[in-house]
Length: 75
Image 1: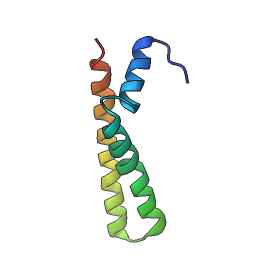
Image 2 (image 1 turned 90 degrees about the horizontal axis):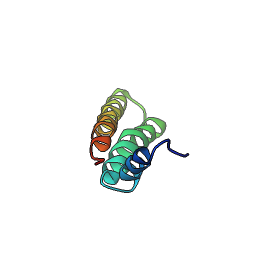
Image 3 (image 1 turned 180 degrees about the horizontal axis):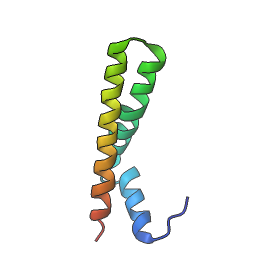
């Protein structure tokens, strides 16, 4: 996907491979998406659903943190 400006391209690179890569890949993707999906797919129960929900909320928090901070780092 192409970005409309060089700043947008720089921010995308910063998120995926730069300063925010660990928070993005581990926080957003792993904690917020993969682990909750695996929990709900392989296990069942109200406790598992609650843990998965909390992990999804953490993933949303990490995503919003990245989307707010990363563009502000462009100078």
